[in-house]
Image 1 (cartoon, rainbow, N blue to C red):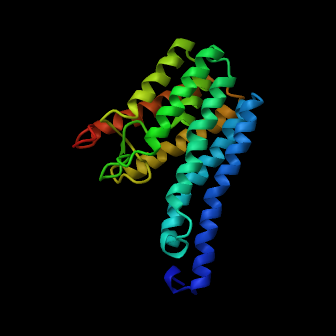
Image 2 (cartoon, rainbow, N blue to C red):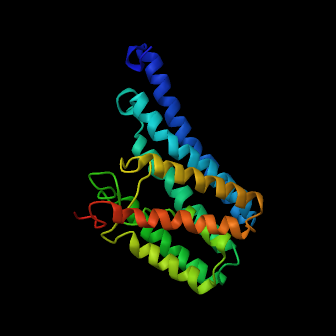
Length: 238
């Protein structure tokens, strides 16, 4: 039976269940935050992985259930942004602060910078281009933090990357949305699955990853950073 052929009550129930699924990401964020505060970083990133899975499929479920029509009393876009800010920004910032990757004072003040800049970015109505690329670095601080924990560069490099990422959120450049951009979509999804596999392996190794896993992380990052140059233009205003 097609979704639109189902009784209205069933349609509303399905739509609200999608909202509940999205909201569950907030509870997962709290679990990840607690793990970060306790310095159990492998568990923190495991919970962030669960949150990433929820975020990766809830949009598809919402479009299928037509939540804006059948459960419009809850704004799914706002709900998604609230949960994303917790899992993409707040929890990673706390994890970096509680880690030994940088001096505590530096990680605290850089965390304030990242949080401040990300709040502005999340409210930017120009976040996506017409062809669904992200305009500026899309505040993937959970991914950045995982890279820093796995690769463990010097503190000065960590600090520089956080400053650069904060500035890049407002730069007129594009970053791929692997699920929405049509160009090389299945290759991009495959690359995401490779990244998830590498992440799971690193977490199971308590983030003390082997050289092979580190090389995989670097290769995936190089692939995604090169993708804007395969677009008609890497500049967001074109």
